[in-house]
Amino acid sequence: MEENLAQLSADSRQNLLALRQDEAEVVLGQALQRLEYGHDLAGAQRLYAMAATLLQDLEGPGLLDLRQALLQENRALQALGPDPRQVQAKALDDVLTTLLSLQHHASPRAPEQLQWWQRLLSPLVEIHASDASVLLADAQRVHALDALQLEASLARAALERGDQQGWARALQRINDWVVRLWPQSPARERQRQALETLAQSPLSLNPAELGSTLRQMRQLRQGSTAE
Image (cartoon, rainbow, N blue to C red):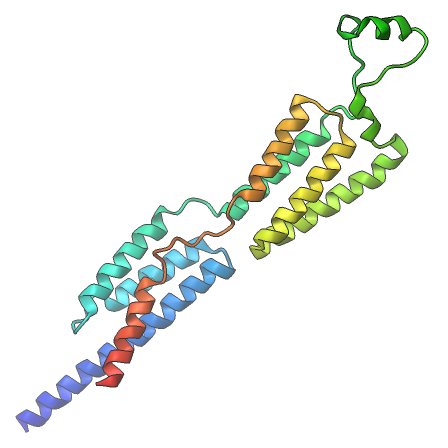
């Protein structure tokens, strides 16, 4: 009888261990999906804490290594800053707001900046900066600004999807419109540089450490199944 009870107790512990490991594996998988597809950092952190609770009191081969790996992942998760997609969406809005506040006519050059022949001809002809020829006429600006806003919407959609190439292409098209809509100026060039920086910024929130515990759990399961 005692041997039967001891065997039953051992089987119960083994079943509890397997059940808790299964639950923790499911929870960790959900955490990674929330982070990758839903950009839900807070939700992923809650699920990682739940997985740690499931594993904290269990004993068995490999569980100490699992808890240590999970602790490292938790630290990496807690160290993450805000979602880069949210940061870059705000930066894009700031660039567009600044651009729309810029003067869209090329400013005439001051008389002292003109060459002698330009000063001689200035009473007879209107002199513009050389890059003014690329600017759109006022009648075309409305349609061009609509196109700019459309490209901004496409950029935001690519950002939400995590589509790095689509994001970079949309920002390049925005940059092309900027040249047509605003004359050359230091303020315009700062916004163009900001767009180029955004296009090269990574969209991923996942640090390299994430997923290591889940991989170890699956390897542990495969090892126990092979036995």
